[in-house]
Length: 267
Image (cartoon, rainbow, N blue to C red; front, side, top):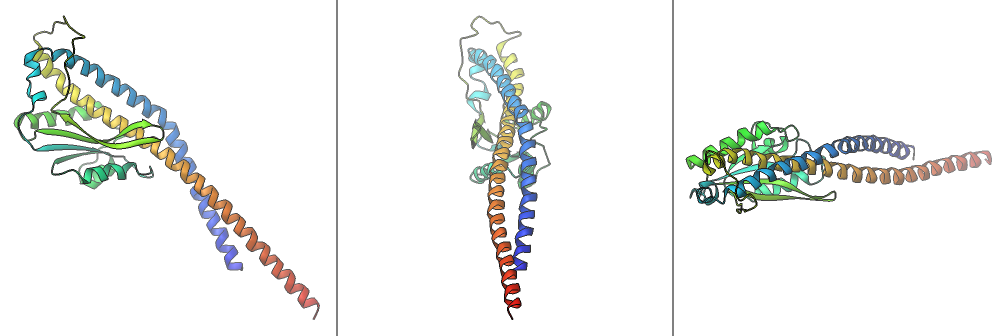
């Protein structure tokens, strides 16, 4: 009986330590969440502003027939996989890797420590990923696209639906699927539309990559906070159950001791 009481006490202590850890990680995730969601919103706004410019440029037949929109006839693919820097975020990383596993042959680029470890590529942090990092990657992809080394570019990332819903998605980003718009009718581009388009495309692809990374990072933070809240609730329930079991065991031990004392006094 004494061994059972000691074992229960140790288990309660262990789970209580875990509870403190999950609470701390949940607080850290909560403190990062607003900044992450703001970053997602700003990167989306910037990407959309560049996309509006491209829609206007596509009114020109030279731009509409560009290789960036019509394709270069090649089938080789580049795949960007965006995962988290850390674990303990529910199924966030696992969902990304499950989708990546179903993808066929491709030149793979990883963003996020977990993705870099899985694909054995140099470490690139998802949390600290900058526009300059995206520009370097975008320039590399466009160079390979123009040379014919690749014909398509896809991104596996996590889409933010709500605080309780995030899903791993695959999106084809090159060749671009953008429809022309007449909203900017009458706008004059210097020196000409094709030159402006060629200058905007690298910026646009970089903005797409940044937006996907920012959105994925926001999903990671939200998923981690949700996971830590759930773990905290489970730990609290386990402690309550173990405490009840401990009290019963302790009460049983006390009753046994009293019984033995009474029995001894009657001898």
